[in-house]
Length: 421
Image (cartoon, rainbow, N blue to C red; front, side, top):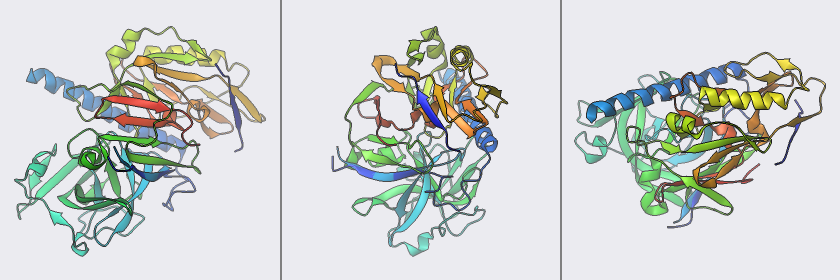
């Protein structure tokens, strides 16, 4: 479909990886590109449900308790339940390249490994640690093993990890270490990761997952001595474009920051304070207390931004008032405000901006305002939560084309416009 949309105006060098869409023409996965939109959105809802359940459970437990960088090309991807964007990194000696999703909502990095008990089909050959001269297992009583949220011991007293995602995806295996290569010149010896021998769920044909959470076993933490505890990415606006993931302090020009908040019962996640929403340059009549009650999570692995139900209702109403010239279309899964643009070559869409504490503003790219399933079904790319106190989530569709900076050491998150196309 060819649809033109016009928005109404109102420590060492970094390591950089390329980012592409997992279901786009740049994807390394042959099976991409044909996943139904409804299935992608249903999987996205499964991830959001799992985040809400995790937040609720963590809160209940808490009550009971009392300057260098590596740049990697990144490719946009369809929903995988735990991550939507793909980068290629290398493991082992000799190095083998693997396409993995990256996820700010996960700590443990893992790839599928031989021998497999239960592995899904992936694009590249499965990693065999026996063929890597630098691979070693970690002992069950080691400090590194103890840093895992969930671990056990094998018969050989080696560390076993277990990560279960709320959408019923799961990975289990040996927790070991090997050389991680972000690029030929950006290498992390002794990187701790999961060698998964039992894996199932919404991982598509990716070899595994790159964990970018705030926990001690995440890539961010393990690479902090070399690159500093900071990373950034730009998610491209189309499935045929390329973005990047930068580990370290990359280009920060024109970046505006908001404080990075910590929720004690969810320490691995990145929280911010959303204070306002604008449509067509006009601030909507939404109380700031709504966002304070819900808490707002930045998440690269969720597709569609979720808002408190009353805030979403105000956004939807304002958006619909400016779209009355277009015929409505049926709802698409979680998206309830859709339009039929059949016969139109140009469509005028009101701008949408998300305003955070400190003044940082994310003026959503037009590809993040409408989720275009087809010319006859283009939908407002936001959804409302079921409950007022559910986590609000700033998802990847709304982050597209921005350089999104996670500066963990300085506890701030930044947004720089037009960093990729």
